[in-house]
Length: 180
Image 1 (cartoon, rainbow, N blue to C red):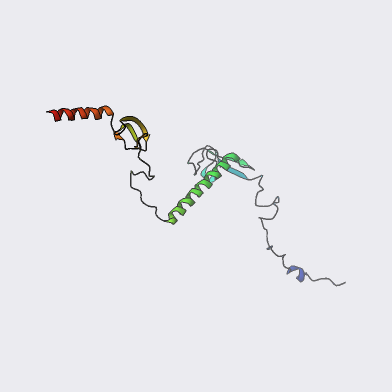
Image 2 (cartoon, rainbow, N blue to C red):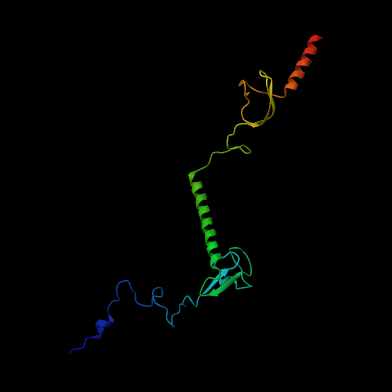
């Protein structure tokens, strides 16, 4: 039986989608693999803000967290994140910051907002009246507290500021001046 030549096998093509050489992203780690398994990997994290740490900024008491600027807070744990709940809270804060930045850029793209005078109230409100008022036609006194309407409850006429005593005192002064 004739033997197949080696030349045919040597120049065979790899299956579609694979390249020659080691593919570390899909290959199962072996004992001799340069990439450590997840159990062997150290995860660094700041114990104050929950941000992932980097051993380049130091370790344990000699560490520095660039996110919260704290010293001595970056710790590592083998095979898992040291403080998962802190990491989740840190991710939520980062997402809120990104959302806020997105909203600001979206508002800037819409264009300028109308100018409101400094010190002016942007919401129009009715003026409210407080104090003692009287009805000149009905001769009734009212003590108003934050009342929007200055109309008499009985006749519907306008109310005047002041008490009835003040009005009668003015009438007496006018009468005295007319007698002279």
